[in-house]
Length: 256
Image 1 (tube, rainbow, N blue to C red):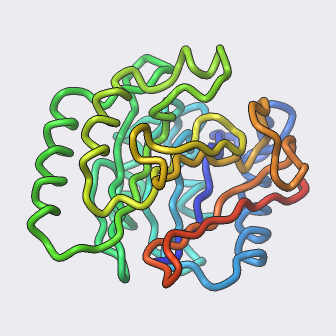
Image 2 (image 1 turned 180 degrees about the vertical axis):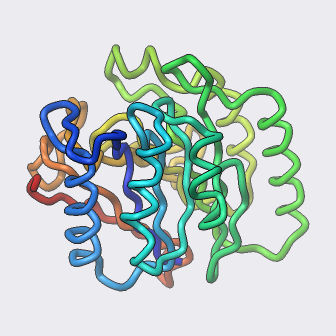
């Protein structure tokens, strides 16, 4: 399963509006064009990993739908702290799974987690979603093995940035405990941090944890950008169930 991950779009109700000195809608349009041109093959799925609409407006999600509808790509969506989950579902719920959800893709599975917590910047899964996740992982233990990718908006571990770590995933330790036993887990990807970041699942060094840049602007960086472009917009290319195992590459492009 080939996945193009884009994150932290920060769209606004005003199509020509500016956030952090850049026009989010124009940046998204540019990101889609640049990322698809740079991808080594057509993606099977476009993963948008949260903070889709900065002002949490209906119009912002309509702009997102308009930007995506002509691509013809299956979608998977995560709400972030800068999102309104109900409005997101009302506009895009018929066009692709929205977290929490388990997606059966070609040759692999994608598990989407919802870390949105109303009124908070920090992330939170909550007892009911953690119980749901435990049940899903238990069911997968009885199913035929297939590579598994987990996606969540907030980083489940500290990344080494004091501000970001203070507004990370509040119950990340509970998530890591569950994922530590996931049989077919190949990688965990997340957004929120507006930068490249790479680590590994505690206790399972072969399972990478990967942060994704933003389509808008960069933060940090905590780690050096492998492409030497930490301030540029970007995304990630992910291949789950590839013949040589999980593969990924960082994408960067100049802002519009």
